[in-house]
Length: 135
Image 1 (cartoon, rainbow, N blue to C red):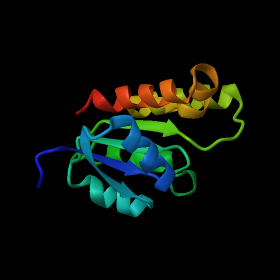
Image 2: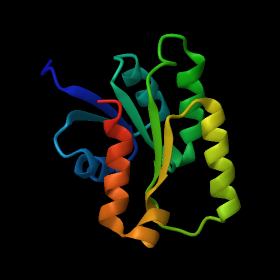
Image 3: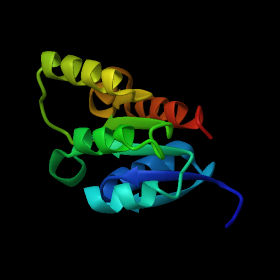
């Protein structure tokens, strides 16, 4: 073990690259592309779990529910984020944010929407800040 803080990214290669850029060397990053792999790797108690909204065919909520239902993992901070470009109704994003908060997620960062509003660099910086709180 390196002594570095650990981030588990539940997501695809693009999400891992984005998160790596967002935290720029602050932590070791491990990825999991499936729900089963993410739950299995979460048992190692990373400092924070970052989960893409489109993770494993949109199983983000299932991962959060599994983590929060397990007494051994429920206290691991989870930050969810959206990177897949596409139009989502504002009401959907608002409801998803509320549902994630109710499940105990630390933050939901809509990188796509933020990029359109404040630019990609600022959006990635906000994701990095949300993750860095737990490192």
